[in-house]
Length: 104
Image: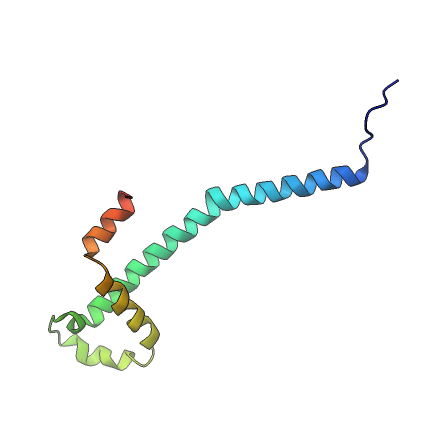
């Protein structure tokens, strides 16, 4: 007669919770997390392009469009300051794009 450990409902419930946690972690690590990083990087690039088109005078490029887009400044004040810090800290936009495709 077999006298090993008896598997009850409680142990099956614990095993199911462990498996569920493991599967959720695997999904997050393989699918969800890299996707968020890619989407955030692309959104940041689009925001940079928009702000550069609207405010080229921030980098010394004269543009008549800046006169009309100055009305946007009260609405995008926080994004504008973050954009200036981000763009001035970069060595170049081309180098940043190169790092996306060829990580160091």
